[in-house]
Image 1 (cartoon, rainbow, N blue to C red):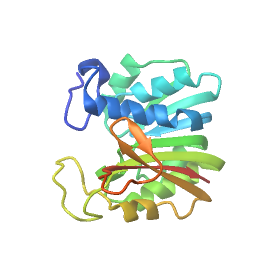
Image 2: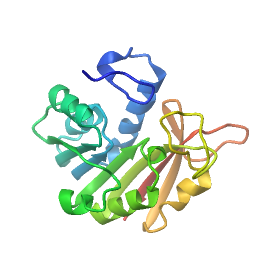
Image 3: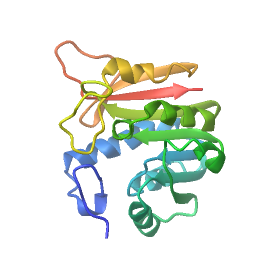
Image 4: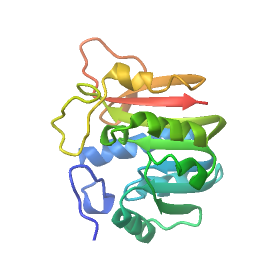
Length: 204
C-alpha cells in the first residue's frame, strides 16, 4: 500500500483543503494550456497529474507517459489512475538511456523533481533530447541555499538558488519564469515578498 509522506502527494489520502495538495494540483492546472501531443510527466508520483492531463486535454493529447523511480508508486498509479491514454513506467530521470527508451514528446512536465537529484544537468539534458523542436518543458522547483549545500528538507539532496534554477535552461530557445505563492503564480516578483518556488516554461 502506498503511504503518505512529507514528500509524497496522494490525493485520496489527503483532505481537500491540504495546502501541499492544493499547491501540487495548481501546478498541473497552470501547465494545462501548454500541454499537447505526446506528453511525458517525469517523477509523476501517484499518477493523479497524468490523469488530470488526460481528462483536461483529451482533445489535445495523444498519449501521456508517467515515469517514476519507485516501483510501488507506479503500481499504485496503474491501479488508481488507469486511463486509455496513460501508460505508467518505472524509470530514472538521470538515466542517459532514458531518451532512447521513451522517444520524443511535444510536452514534458516535471514538478518538484530537481531538488531530489544530484545530477540535475543530466536530467535537463535528457529532457532536451526527448523534447520535439518547438515543444514545451514545464518544471517547478523550490529555491534554497544552492547546489551542494545542505537543506532542512530530509528528502532533498539540495535546493537550487533562483539563479542556479534559471541557469538550467540556457539550451532552450526561450524561457518564461513564474513564481508560485500558494495556488497562485506571478510573472513579476513584488518587492518585499518572499518567493519559495520557481516555475519555468521552456520552448525548444
